[in-house]
Picture (cartoon, rainbow, N blue to C red):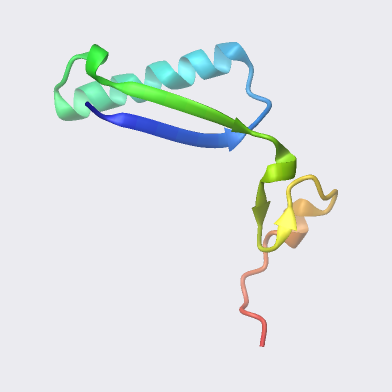
Length: 74
């Protein structure tokens, strides 16, 4: 049984989550030719204060700019 775990920022509404779970289930059943009841999808909403990238917390107002560091500091 495939278990699909998705960590995502909080803020998706119930309708979006329902569609997301349905699409992930459909893709998986079609790809592996298994019945839908064998696919488990877990969406985990993560608060922005618990999410970071490139050393910057997602609640930082400049997160988008600060999280795009592509060079390794010397």
